Image (cartoon, rainbow, N blue to C red):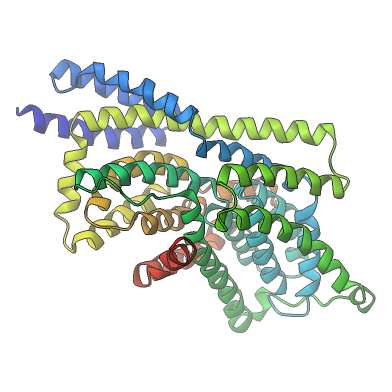
Length: 463
């Protein structure tokens, strides 16, 4: 058999082989690396793979460990964990519940708004879903909310941290797309390519994030009209209304100041994402101290959680690097290029196919797993076809937000299942997530139809 064809067949089998191994429940990072090594040995035995290519991994790993941009990841995670334990989320939820209590669907609106604020100040999906599940879900059920609507609102609002800056996914996306775009542009003769920065991705994600917030609130408003019993009003007693304005101010001002300090410094060009993350971490500690929630115990828990989450993400990244080397060197790049280039519709058709594949993978894989596997394989082809790297990065982030909500392995569903009362079944949580998955797909379609939703603000800020 032709060695080139044999290599492409092996690379295709390796991709599906990894999906199968992950579905068996093996650890992601070791599945990626282990499966790639096995196929590398098979390729070496068949004469279509040179094992000396593994030597390039050393440079990759050193580059990842010394990458200043990626230092922002543990800092943003630390900021989110500290804020989750500082009591800010609880105060926000209680206060917003009172503010919207007299309106049908008011608790739903308050959860969505708080989810957006926590996303912009923490970016940690798991912590947000658990916190809102512990505080808001019992209150919504006591008020007579449909359990499916209540759990769907909480899960969807918690996943806003996936796309609303400071999103750790966008940090990795920016780093990967910057290098891929530079390679593609230089291969096309442009030796001074326009950089793809994390700051521009953050700016591009703001309007799509707000679009999703509006879609979620619109769905709650529709439910309040067509099925008012599913989201009744929860009137606030008169004696609690007199201090409501002061409560709202005290609940909103601290997270808003932190958002302005972190995102404002990045978007304004005052600080890099890494510098802004360090400011955010210090700000989170100050807010925790202000709420009298800062002590050695909480600090220890925050540090351990940060180290655990960061280690998990980077180990997956290291395992994905092994997969990428074997896949590319056996001819997988050519296979993907031929497949996507021959799709009807050109760049748009190829992008739709990649987005569809990512959406399907979201049913069984985590966001980081998908981007570390799929982006290095498909992004070079899409960028070569003329897709805007900034648009691609943000659109992928919106698409993969659904991976937190799609059964059976949606992590937001698992987080909420862990804190939901026994009266709320797993089936209710799954059914509640379905409308919000559809809303996210509507948002993604809007980004295809109106790409300026992503590119307008970065152009305005960075010319």
